[in-house]
Length: 334
Image: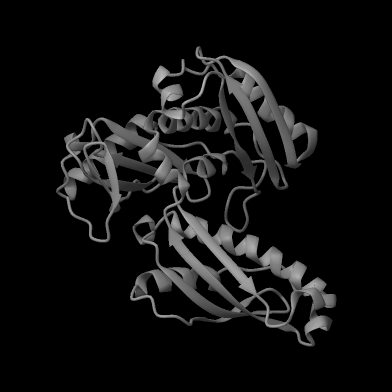
């Protein structure tokens, strides 16, 4: 399910396409171009989840060609970034994406069976990082609520088609729901009912008083977001299959701590703050260890663990803590 991914992702990928001809004279081509933007952003987000160390603010321009069947050709980075690894990651992500076939009316508008496209991509930490530093109690409570929703919805929020639901609800200081509304952009009333029942069913923890002090507001607390799900493609499970995770969260944390030690990173430095999420499409666990207060400070570390092979990789992130203060640094130092 992609709901958890949306809740924890701390990356912003902005991809802007521009056709060579005026958009107002090419309505069909422009509509197709808007579809490509959404698909490209989604592909980049999924890829960059595995390369968080590349979220360093770099911006690049790329040029590529989409043929009539939606296949990508001739991907080129047309600007200098001094980060060849990031360039390769973005170029490979675009090259491996298959877009919908170009509608015939769009082909007639441009007078060709292909489109040449330019895009600008920025890899940067988004507003969640600033929020995490400025209002940490609220941030942590909201992430806890989102994770509870993810765990509750895992068995039920899926379908043979795309689902997307906006939700908004309010909690009193005791963590009780006082009001709620949901709106399905895709999936209809059944998707709304799944989300509504989950929100009402979960027993949320009491809200720390510091949350309202940080926000400078009175109860109730607003919780909101968007949950989406897409049926797997290719080699993934069918819509009738539900993947049963082999590792428990406790086991995943144990393996992740062992991976830290194997990479000469002392696990005890990170015992206070550990954030866990998982992606069903790739069968991967993502465990982010933070050295923020009351920890000793230093860089956050991300461990990616495959649920099937149990192989773990360790990546030092550019988020560095000194007491309660977070900074983004270009060089990773422990």
